[in-house]
Image 1: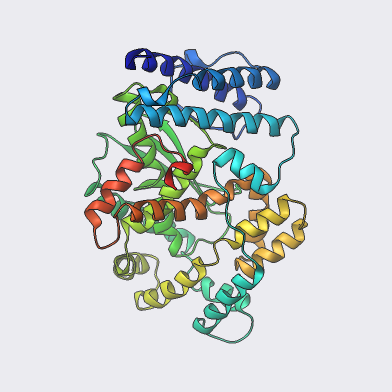
Image 2: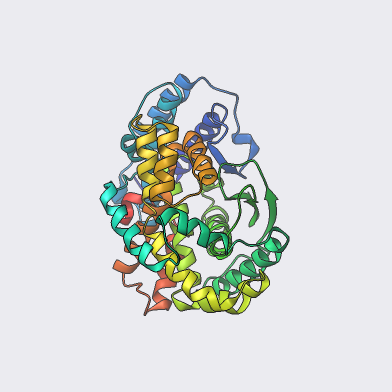
Length: 410
């Protein structure tokens, strides 16, 4: 099959993909995270079984196309649409009542499985953290007391967050050509199971929501600014729109199914984007000189805070273990809350909020920590190590500007 006919076939099948994603969204309110494509692709509601049959037919047709006849980007596009549709089939089966284990679900939906860690792994980290924390008593209690000293006052949250966003954008814009007119709006909300969310609206514009139900500590300002904004979700979506939708007319990127392999790439690059924008001691210096004073906190404590925070981040996979046990029926909600309090060092309120996230988003939790680790390994194995920042940013930009799958990062 010639290149132009293959391209035409992929374009036609990509429109089928969009229609199917939107059809699943009618059954699952969380499924369609963004859509800014032609409204003509939004069809009538379909039964799940009809969606399943059409998706299977589209997959079968995609498999008749020969990737060896495609250039590199077309091969990425072909594999992307195929794997996204396979994930869609798994979600349709789940909506139809099929039960999957935590690992089966994450493999089917996100093209990856997170490693499992025993409690002893986290106990060793907790012992190290306990040596670094001031005070006496249990590590969870001491950590919670310590963190409370670094809560951003509610009345200063916006000025701190705005300063973090401005700096994240400046650092990203020096490395990545951002689309003309890109922008986003920030809203502070309550009653959510997540701490922050980016809703991409198209035309390089996002709505970023920050949940203020629970206290927000100093580390969350830069985390949210970089993860949700620069060079995270906002930049990722804006570059896909610019390079794939506008330049190539690949309309499949105007729709984003949340429960799909794309999310591991999106969350992984957003989390790794924090380190990209604020490498090493640069983050401590910026926060000590700018953010801590804006929050009314002593900048002299920033270095100690981030030494302790670095140890805390080693516990990231404890959240996965709580989710795996809870969703596989091995932990009750109360036991999952206790696990999160003991090994992820969450307060009781935050742990309860997290179990509600498990209810709503299930194995999605792997996309944050496993995604970040996979992205980091991919970039550094290609030579993008910290001592080579130019190459590091180049590989990062290529990753967030092209059709990528988690299995392609291995």
